[in-house]
Length: 84
Image (cartoon, rainbow, N blue to C red; front, side, top):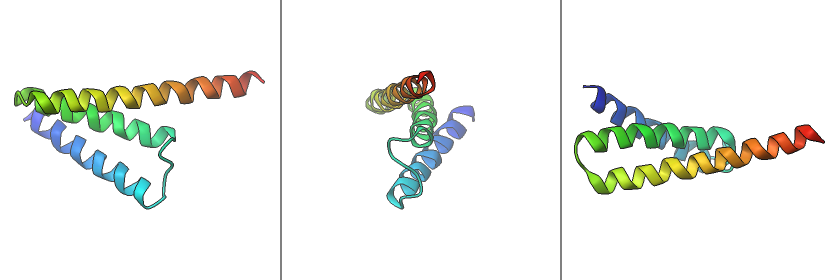
């Protein structure tokens, strides 16, 4: 049950993030979009792992890692701005 809920939440959050960016409600480079992608990736990895859908596990791990990388970059840029 947990794995199914995680998968549904991941799918909904992923579609929400895509819809918000596509309709120019949020910035694709922004923290909110990346955070939504991270949440979606983790939810979908959880579900795919439970179902042994290894290509989807790999895809969503990469999806989440990209989100983490961009969130890290945003954090570093904010620290540089605050230091000035």
